[in-house]
Structure formats: structure tokens, C-alpha cells
Image 1 (cartoon, rainbow, N blue to C red):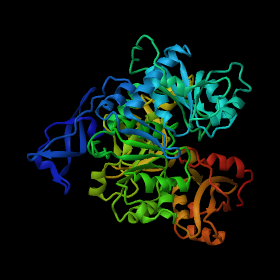
Image 2 (tube, one colour; image 1 turned 135 degrees about the vertical axis):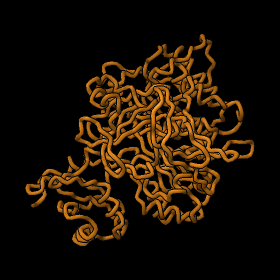
Image 3 (cartoon, rainbow, N blue to C red; image 1 turned 120 degrees about the vertical axis):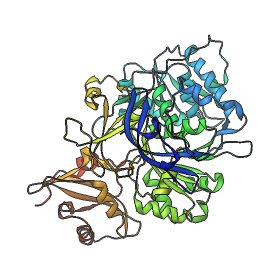
Image 4 (cartoon, rainbow, N blue to C red; image 1 turned 45 degrees about the horizontal axis):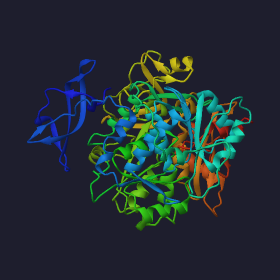
Length: 597
């Protein structure tokens, strides 16, 4: 199944168009698709703009042959004095001109002072702070590779990533230097530390290089020739929900392709920056993760929006951003949507500034979606997207036009331009495509797909099937070619041969009175093989009768989906930085005994 946006549809006239209220049109027609690989017959469902009564089809998107810095900096000259990034805590800020200049100085300093060479890896151990984009863009401009490290990692986890990536230097905050020194303790070779000072009078950290001084210094260095766009730009480590994290290699072309794919009219939600208007985007999603890195930091800098950084999510800081900065767009993960929808501190008047909430990383509860729409008096659009680290990240996204037209609930969107996908049976080695409403594994081809895992040839080979990247996600599409996610294939619970998706039960349990959050895993059972067990976090001050919850679930699902593994009340559901539930941790901690039969 090809995206209709990655092709040029022939023989399509106005008679095939259905006019929409917003001036767009939709058509469904058998047509010929023109792609770089040739022409193919295909059934198209396409959203497009009409002019003078003609239906103009969406055309194949050209991916510019630029490096990431060249692409992001392209329009900075238009508004050099506008603020590009501002810290919500310290209020330090940088204009687009300052971001560009400091990144350029950093690129030369890394070559001159640290003597780094083309293809060397530089690690960034930072929360969301204004220096993050300067660090990324300066490193890439120096023809180096960026590996981003989660600042909440333990010293051992930091050390593992530094060693696996063979990082030659690292940028971090003064406050994180003790953590980094602990990580260095068992490393044979220490690497240079570039220390970012967030306050003007911070004490200098011994044996570190001042990042702040480096980006203020103009170095006389021969101009650095840009990399090939096929060279690796990022070495990002997958979340490791099913094993140890793997280094995902993403090229300049991968990243720019995904930025262009989301930049067509039906997907683009940012308004044009002018002298008198600038969209404000809170940096809530962590920038060390691909979604925050590419689809927030790089995307909205490219659009000349104003980014407000949030080093760590707290309810107080979040509400302060809402009331003080009045963001127009809100890229988040489901737990933040749940907080927005349900927490009494997030008052209706605080969210009236929002135009759209963009949610990814995990399935969004339809109940929370409806609540946030109601809280904004129907003003906000809630748009979901789907992707992985290996796909830069987006494969699917929700068009606001199609969502309105089809009145979609729960869909993770449609196929992006220049992207081809198919849904296959998880145990079908032939890879034959399934039809509408048949769940299976999603396979992907496209310019945003990784070239493979760092130093893991066997795992790279097993991740692809005849050139298709295997996502490992259980997904289906409806008759309108809109997609829906059910769960990770490896996390499905197999009860008497039936497959149970944990997400389905989790969404149901979250609607039970007094439940704040929930996670479901399969536990061993002598009679059934596996049975579902629920882990529940209660709302403050609430009590729970577990028998009543089990009965409630039993009344709403088939017999094999019932909570025969019981209910366990815990303090918090383990999740990674992107909001995905870490069910494997629950299995390790709690599945030491078989469930009763």
C-alpha cells in the first residue's frame, strides 16, 4: 500500500472529487501512480486542494540534498532577532541569529580544540535546555555524529552507551558532571567533557572545557565541507523494551526526509511566522529521544517557531508555561494528555490558547482525547502519529482534514508521502499483505527508514524482510486506509491460543472509578498458558475493591481476556522517557510465580 501523497495520480478529474467544507477535496479512484521506481496501478485515497474546479493530486515529494544544519538554518535570516528558544526555568534565551552563530562557533571549536575528525561520535547528555539545539546543530556542522543520552540514566547505563557508540567527547550540564564522573569510573579511557553553565556565576568544574566560552569564540579554522547526506547524523539508542538498547543509525537524508514528509498542507499545523506572529511550542517531549529531537526541536526551529524548554516535567512548571507563554501547539505523550484532561490544576482557561495537541509514542485513551477536546470547548484538534526510532520517527500521521471529514477517534493516521507500508500476518513468512480490519505486523519502506543498527549486522538483517522494515507492532487499517495500533507483537498475551492486546484492557481499566493508571502483562498459567494480570495505580485518596474491578472487566470483554491473573496495586507504572509502558520491568519484578489456575 503506497501513500497517495508520494505519487502523481494520472487520469483524475473533478468528477472523482468529493468537496469538503474547508475547501479541500477527497477522491477514491483506481489510477496510475508514478514513483521513482516506475508506474503502478493503485487504488488511491487522497486529500488535496482544488483549484478552478480541477482536482490537483498530491505529488511525489522531493527530498532536498542538504545536511541537517543547512536545512534547519535555511530561513533563519528572515527573522534573526526573534527568539528561537527560551528556558522556562531561568528565562535565558537565544535568537535565531545567536543559535546559528553559536552552533557555527561550536563546530569549529570541536575541530580546533578537541581535534575531532569526520565521523567521530560526540555524546550529548542534556535535559531540554536552550543549549541542546546549539549542541546538536554545531556537532552536525562539524561533520560529527550525535548520540543523545538520557540524563536520568544511571552511571552504568551512561557508560554502556558511551562505550558502545565509541564517543570521543561529551556535552553535559555542570549539575550532571558528578554522574558522568561515576560513569567514567570503570572506563579505561576518559573523554573530554564540555560543561554547559546554566547560570552566569556557576563554579568552574575541574578538568572540563567550558561550552559557554567555546560557543562565544570565533576560531580561525578552514571551512568545513558538508557531509554527504547519506552519512550517519545520529546514533540514537532504541528504548530497549524487548532487550538491551541498540544504536540506530539515522542519516541526514533520513531526518530531512521525515521533516519534509510532515510538511505537506494536510499535515502541517504550524502557522507561518511573520513579524507579528510566531507559534509557541513547549519542549516537553525529551529531545534526547527521536520524537522530541526531530518532530519538535528540529521541525519547529525549521518553521521559525519559539521553543520553550522544560528540563523536567512538573505540574507547576507545565501550568506556568500554559499561563505565561500561551503555547499554540502541544506535542506530548499520552500521560501528559491524561494529566491535561484530568488534573484539576489544569483549568479550562489555561488551555484555551491551544490549537492542536499532537500525541505519539503510545496509544492514546479515547476517553482522555474526548476530555481534552471538551476542556477546550472543542477548540483543540487532537492528532495522533505513529513511528519508531528506526523510522526517524514518523510513518503515519493524522491529517486534520481527514480527521474532520471521517470524524476519526483513536486513529494513528495515514501513510506519509514517499512511504509504502503493508500489514502482514505475524507468522506469515511470505509477507502477503492483509486486507482492511485484519490486524497484523506493519512493514515499512521509505527514505526515513534507518540503514541499520550500529555494529549489529545480525540484528539489522533480522529487522528487515525483503527490504521491508519490520516494526514489531500489531496494527490494522480500516476501509478508509486509516490506521490503528493494537500493541507490540512481543507483548501480546496468548491465552488458550487467543491473542490479547494489553492496551485494550488498560484503556478499559483506566475508566474504572479511582484508577489513575494501569498496565497489563501476561503471567504464566498451567491451564491457559498465559492469563492477563493488571497493575493499577490509584488516584490520590482513592481505594479499590479489586474484585469489583475484575468483575467490571469481565462484564466488558470476552472470557479469555478476563483478569484471571488478578490485580496488583502499585505506586507507579514504569515507563520510558517517551511515555511507553515498560511491561518487561513488571514481568521481571512481579511474574516470579504462576497465576493460580
